[in-house]
Image 1 (cartoon, helix red, strand yellow):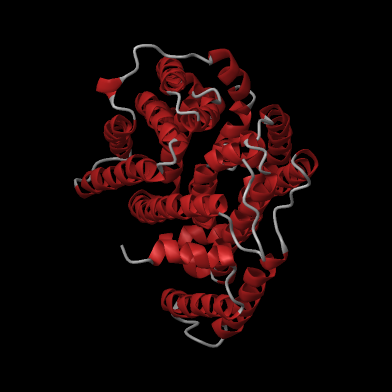
Image 2 (cartoon, helix red, strand yellow):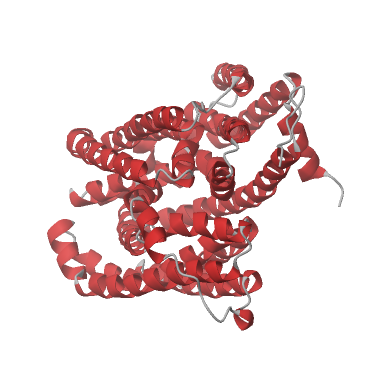
Length: 509
């Protein structure tokens, strides 16, 4: 069949379908991430104001170890499930699809149950000999109970993404989990319980989210209509997935390794402060993460069809969207770091420099990070395995070089520098391996120019307006800066892809 060729820069039908899918899935993903970030910031505000930086650091270490344990249990199958579910669906092969689902859920769950037990039994040793904090042991035993639930939620969410149903992922993994966690935590705080009971809220939220995930899975693949036979591709999927293991683990938790190293040096207050500034800087990743998730099956399909021209245009479009979203968040953090951190308490002002450094790293990651997903979905999972080894070695080298000497600032430097190094490497690999595809085209100047004008105006206004009322200053000048940014973008004229998306999102239904 002859492919439709776009004329005069117009989009063809398949490009419109893919961009519409990205717009719909990305908007659901973005709404979910916006909700998660809002809930997370409010949750962090409650915990830090109630328990302080050191107790929050203790809580974060326990949660981080449990979530990393859950990620290890997935053994890279989260990447394989997205790719092979998308391919099986495109072939309309229900037996093959059922085989992918079985492998992608049952194997990680079995590993998760085993590692949960290991973490529970080794909690005292980990707390005393690695982190030198005996009070961490009961927290680890509690958090280990969440591991199987986290594994199952992640597996079912990856299946939903493979079906291009980003909204199901948002409902279960984002809305249900975080909403229930906040509600239960509020009850714990109002009743005057200790920080350990906030962990109980986390476990209960993970269990509730698992139930919601199963409900939506049943809508995608009705349990009462399961095929009598599963067509298995276990060796092929594992061969593809296992090299992704380290890559996916680092993508999810790369920056959190700095928190682990800070904890290993026994600086729990710095763990708490670093976790707060990391949460703030990650706001800039919301658009990128949402777009990357829904783009995985689109990358896989376009590369499988060898449709490289459309792959290039789609890749450049989502990278531009990521930059456009991140720039105003980056400007708010860089221009108003003290104003933002005062919300969490005076002791968090120590994180000002680290927050700016992390924001720089987030901007670079959001601008270039889709290259890793493109490599994965194009079948170069082994290349990403080598990239992950470089990432891990760079992270560990920078962590142990910078954190002992510079503490919190060293942790932020290590995390951001690692992103710059690894993403630069992956951009070069995409260019060499996939038809010389570059992440940007000339239209990238529009968000950059808009950001420059909006940022300069806000920076000079800050020194003369409401300097003695930092929170009010942040709200008023920050809002004005966002309006200036959007106005300049509109004056520079949106591209055809952007106009098409706006019509899809805002059309009357």
